[in-house]
Length: 231
Image 1 (tube, one colour):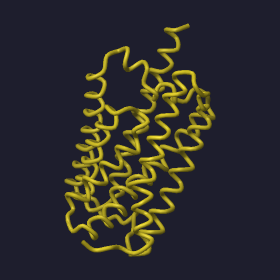
Image 2: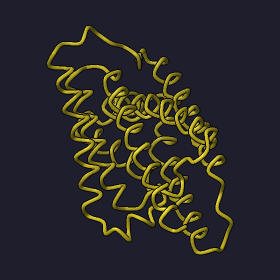
Image 3: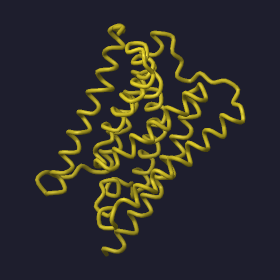
């Protein structure tokens, strides 16, 4: 095992330990909010916080990657097989989402936090869209790019590095519940495979953004339907 430099060690700490801890703490606070123990944060506060955290993650990934010559936006002329792989990855992500809906009862889906977070007003949609776009770049740069490279260099095994990054990525989404975190783990592995096959993060960033935007708008539409049923 090779020990990386101080910036890379700090980045691994932030990515593999700090962000999962923050997500687990947030999950406990949201559970307390559902039980009426504490006040639920506003959707504006949630998406402003998300936008800020994703901006910090992207900045750290860019700075640390730049330190050892990793270009998160490196791209080559895409070949048809690379575009086909990107479309296949996108389709797989939607298939995983369909599985997530199938393994939950209608009552369980109705109580998911993602419906409570879904934007309602134009300013919330603006913050949400910005967070999704920045997050799509930041998460691919951090988990599939810089973090993966550091772990691969340190451990010597791309397989273990990918599993560690995918696990951290899933834990960072634990506010959505353990079932969603398990599905996010699968999606993370799909994105690792896409990056390994295409040799660039850019296609993964595009796939990530398209999926999150489409899924988010679908969630927002369902959230409005739930509200109309209640009223």
